[in-house]
Every structure is written in C-alpha cells, then in structure tokens.
Image (cartoon, rainbow, N blue to C red; front, side, top):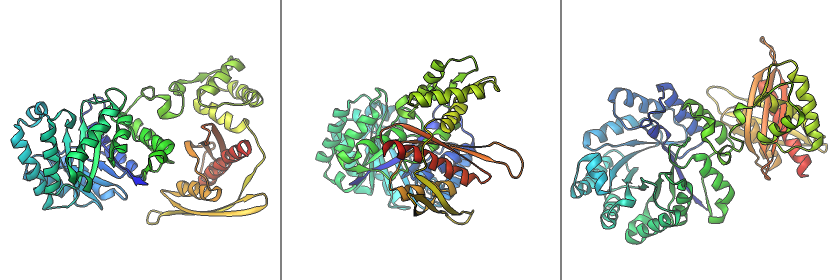
Length: 471
C-alpha cells in the first residue's frame, strides 16, 4: 500500500488571507497541532519581514517532533541562505523552490521571461543543494503552462537535485479526469518523474479539489497539499476521510492520526476565527446550525426530538422520552438549554445499557520529560483484558490503550471536560462522543475527581452503548 504524503499549507495561506490575522503565538500553536496529527510536512509562511518571520520559523523548527518543515527559498542566493538558517534547527526540513510556469504568472509574479525562469529553476535548486538534499520544486500554475516548457522545467529540476516535484492547478479549473490525465502525461513525458515524489496542489474553485487530488493519486502522485481550514484547498479532514472510506480500493493510505483530526482542526478553526457555518455536514459530521441551538422549558417533545436529530443522534422512542424528561428537569432551572447541555443530557439519559465492559484498573505515567503511557485493564464477561499504549498526553494514551483492548478504532467525534464543583478537590465531568462503523453517534459521560479517570469512564460508557447495539 502506497503512503501518500500530506503537506499542510495553513500557515502559508493564512499570511495571504485578509480575513485571518494570526498572532505569533497562534501561528506556533497551529504548527504544534499539525505536528501532533503527524502531518508529514508543514509549509512555513514566506519570509517577508526578515526579523519576525525568521524568529517564527526558527521557533517552530525547534518544536517539531514528527513533521518536516518546508521553507520557501525565495528568488536568489541570499534568500536561500536565509531560508536554510531558519530551517536548520528542525529535526527534518526541506527548502522549496517555487516558480511560475505560465507566461502570465511569470510576468506578474517575478517579471521574468520564460528562458530566464528556466535558468532560475536549476540555479536556485543548485544553491539549495549546498545546504540540503531535501529540495522541493513547485511548478506554480502548471496546468496553464506550455507543456514542453513545463516538462523541461520538471526534468531540469530533477536533474539539478530536486527530490519532490509539485504541480499546481492554481486556478482550479480542471475536471478531476482531466487532472488525472495531466499527471499521467507528466510521467510519460518526464521519465525521471518516476524517481522522485510527485505531488499536487489543487485550488478548490469548482469544489472538486479533493476529487482532483485523488484522480492524481490514482495516476501516480504521492503527495497532496492540504489545509486545516478551507483556504480554497482540500482540507486535511476531507482527504483523511476519503482515505478512511476508500483508500483500500486504490491501495493508498496516509500516516495522519485520524482519531485526533476533529479536535485539532476544530482548535485551528477557532484560532482562525472561522465560522462553523462555513463547513458542510460532510466536513463536520453534524448539522452546521448545531452551534446556535437554544431550547427552553416551553419547548415540546417534538421540538426537543428535532434538536436531538439536528446534532447527530438517532434515538429510539423510549430514549427520546427519557431525554425529554431529563430536559424538562434541567430547563426549569435554566433560561435556556444549548447544544452542550443537550449532549450531556443525551449521554446521561439515553441508551442506558448493561456494562459489557467495566474498568478494572488503570495506571497512567506522564510528565514534561517523558512520553505519556497508559496501562488499562477492562473486564469483559468476568475476564480481565489489558492494553498498554503511548500517546500525545495521558488521555490520548488512555484512549489508544482501550482501542488496543477492544481491537477496534472508533472515530472520536467530540471530547469535552469541565469542572462541576469548585476547589482543589473539584469533580471533573467528561463527555465522549464516538462514531460507530455505521456512522451513528454514541455519547458517554464520566465524573471523577481525577480528570483522566473521568475521561476513561466516559469513553467506556460510550463504548458499552456501541457494543450493546452492535452485538
């Protein structure tokens, strides 16, 4: 099975978006979150303001544990050296030579004629070779370039030392079938393209970028540019979803951590001040209006059931009745009941089932200088089953250990923790929402003075509901 490289361009694109203004700290946090997802490559913003941009890239470089950072090498030797000095502190880095390939873009972006740009391809890559062997050549606006010129540029880039080639549909005007054919033509006319990583960058002008990316993968491409939010490119969430649902059919996969993807992209979207209404139900798994849900004590059972369905739950008549009774008890004490309160009501009152799994014991090791580990024992039918796992933090490790025990991965649709009492011995309330293999949502809650314990109890509660219904 081929591994497809995912290269995130969120930071790069946020710099050119007038509607997204990020602080220095937020940019670092976005990079850290994508690193936690094990995104293969994170593209840095172009170096414009030397002092602040250099500091940003150096800071991010020092923090990356899993991801490679890609730094734009600019248009001359001085730019290349600056890019290298920014990137060299990273565990893994690459330098990226990005040049326009269409005549209109050459004139607009760098004021150069085609022969000069062709010379820049080899000159800049040769300059990058002084510092690293990991070099990307990005052919901007490749689909509108003269084909012989494009093929020569790609061939020259590979000959000069580029190890990754990215071809861009910068206007997003090709149909998926056309783009797949375009990639096939490159392999046919540039034989050396088979010896390097060929990637694609597709603008989503016609809402077909994800389909075009997978047409390219079917034609042999092994890298795709993605974003955490919709900057007119395929989102990492959509691409990962397609890998999960259909990757086996074309024998491809990625190393992205799908269990974390909703949480991570949700955090990044909040930092980008992106309205949830911009996302489709396919992207989020819930109705796009769910965040604005408000109910009060005067609402009927029909209204409450409609709201329950709106946030993704399909309950039995008995469970709907239980939820409505619990809702009335809460609503008389509050001015209104929102989405989070309704989810907590559902988790505590719907689908109360026998405990197929119960918690035997758990041991968690975590600290600022060690990797978090979890050793969990669950009891099923009187038999104790153990699971041990590491993770990005104690709760991640605990959930992965439970997955190891049950031998199955369920998508973590949502995870919330909040204090329900105050003081040093405060009780913590955890809510876990799991999506089963049928696409149905199941939620569980847990309460404990130990936040990790509350989280484990909530996960097992949701798991029992799935196990009971699916047998």
